Image: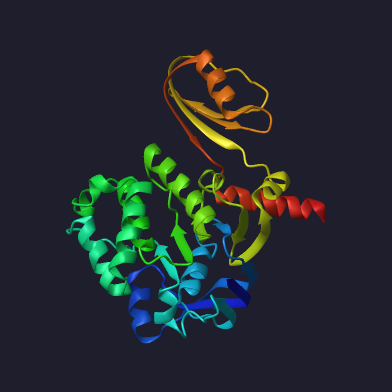
Length: 326
């Protein structure tokens, strides 16, 4: 389905220095620096897999997805997606993939969502019967019927993400690329999106590749994780195996009005100041609902939020674990 073999990509950029003199000098004598985006990347993704690209900003996730979509050409190596080299067979390749990626969104901001869907129907040459069947299914499972007549700019982030995912699947592609699909969405939309992605993986055998910098976003979805940093793949395997080598503690941020917190098994206080406290929770030692219940008994909590370990933290822990093993 997807195969990358010894992929390398380096970007050449103009080196910029601060100061007026340096700016004037650069007009006549440009200095360049080279940024390694991908280094000897190889992997295979099979049909129907859900794979999460996990890594901090600058790890190479975006470059890799753009390459698989045909938007970036590597310096060396091979990339084959559905039997095609994406940048060599760009138009044919687009029929095999759907994508919701960064600022490259498909819904026209000022047009009703349904108008954008109709334009995509013409763009992909979808047969009327196939379009009607796909639209009905996507509208129902993503619960977006109430938004079809609304301009995209007037939707909440979660509502818009649900509509963008529907737009990317109207032509029934074999592969779906998603960039931070759960970032900033409300709880209702998050649950709908997670349930929908699990469903299309099971029923349509859609291959899903999603990028994330937050482990909490990939836990409900990912069967397999590619942990990336500095353009290299540090780990390729099941999420459970990564968690075993590198525990993924969750962070709980609490705003409280009164009370105090005492140490507890699996709960570590990171910092506390002016009515706010941040805890690290080891969910292998204490389930998250139990941790929240325990914290609630010890203080009058105003608000509480839970976040997964950041990809930067996971990458750093993994590197330390590898050094310790060696």
